[in-house]
Length: 150
Length: 207
Image: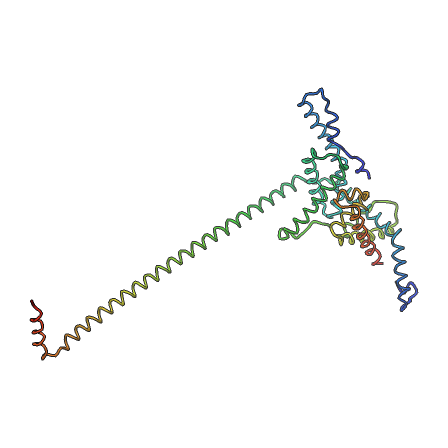
């Protein structure tokens, strides 16, 4: 464009003037013509499409089917997520109950084991003590027993 | 400005027709009949224009047809409340603009539903030209110009596009556009000016 106008490179004021002239020349006839063609084009297109027969019922039915499918899918999703949540909750509760029962059982077993070990230890101590009383002390022990009798 | 001239005032007319001597039922039946006739006339007179505006706004034939149907369905439901303060065309255009706005808002909200649109591309939209006495070169130039205007229109904001189409395709007055779009005349002028600047830039920038 600049070359066609004479190539006034460097003179920015002139360039600006050229540009504004271009804008002005476009303002009236060219813009008006373009808008007029645009209007005519839209009207021709619209008239052609408006006159064309259309299967409105089919579109409506397809739309309603799409809507119904959307709703059904939505319901399935909601129901699925709800039942999934419920199952997960129930599953967790069951797991917690089993774990608690297992811990209680382990504790019971450990207590029983401890009690058994204590009993065994006491029995062992008793037997050890009874075996270790010297024979020389036995008459003295009998005397003490006689003194205690009323 | 054809359509805007066919303003209908159903309430006023219906009331005027109901004479005092007639029975209430008869009068109600008569009013209903009159309203139905009036509405039928309005549909016949304005359907093509509403469709054209919606087609130009969306570039989607099926969508324009659906929105046109919705527009008249809504108008029919509310016909009893239409008081004739503006012309029927302005009232219908206002419904169409709101439906179009709702549609785009819903599309934005439901972006996961369907990303594909049936809108025709700019080249296809530019193919339509009235068969006049023009040379092949003139037709080609006109098609190119129309394509550029379409491109500029595509880049406009929703309001700018609405105002631009009402002004330069539907050839409505600024006051009518203001009433239909629910804007002040000053705002309409501002939108129009910005829209024109963009169209001008598109036409001027590609020579």
